[in-house]
Image 1 (cartoon, rainbow, N blue to C red):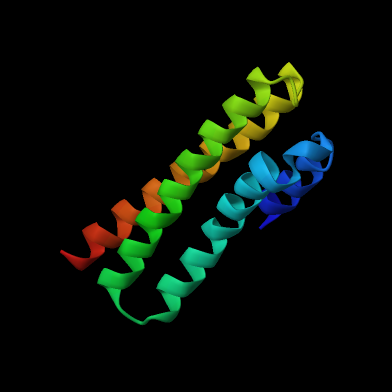
Image 2: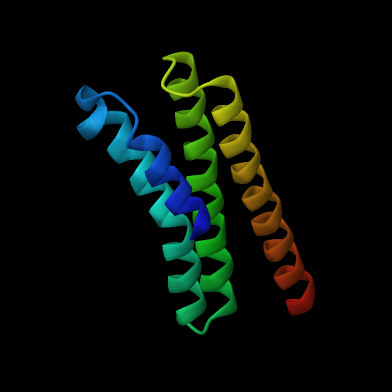
Length: 107
């Protein structure tokens, strides 16, 4: 959820014409990561939990693509891009590890 907060802070700086474009898309993708984790966990089914973790991973990949687009449009400085992109990679690694550990535990 800290990542979502950082995404919101960063996207406040984007041009107004992007409010209903890239800004909303990045924000929706970021919110979907913790939301899908919570929903999957709440289903009390390992298969559902694993599926929702994969959906969260998909959202992280979306965010990474959208951040690259924002950087190429010069909405993010090189340093801002590097910092937020690395946060997304850290979440990607954590989700991948979580997915793997749950699969191993279930087998």
